[in-house]
Length: 162
Image 1 (cartoon, one colour):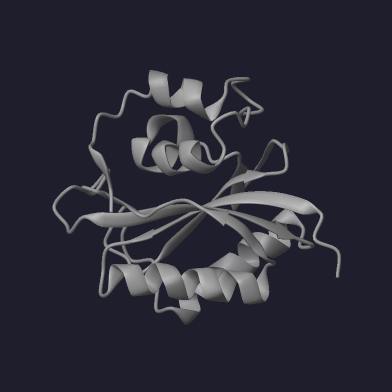
Image 2 (cartoon, rainbow, N blue to C red; image 1 turned 90 degrees about the vertical axis):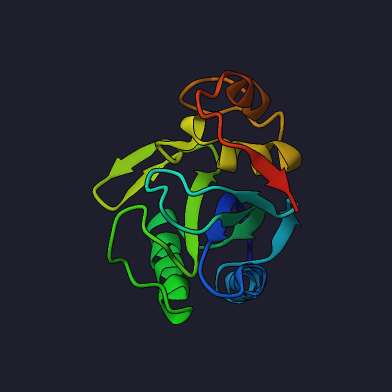
């Protein structure tokens, strides 16, 4: 099988055994999407958006896949569901959340999927782990590196390496 598409994901969660959930997600993603080539350290952050909930653990991953972008999001949603994710409330608590941050260097906006992730530049909890594994990756919309986006990020929530 050819794994030619380079994908950066952010995984996170704030329910149950958070670290175990991240590890289970990595195992399932590797089995269903393709090999995980790199993973950042795990970071803890207060909830973003809806703040009256437990802190999140987040981790950035680089994987390669033979799946197209739409196949990938369908597979990711299936992994989330398999792990017990129920989409009840926007920004609400969750066992696992898996976001596609980048898929090669494509830019796309479809009803169910926007790549690069449309809020990446505003979320320190995503930029910090991304900087660890790909500081010089250039965002194809803003034409800035992850490092530059992090320097300019308006989000001031503390992101603590575990």
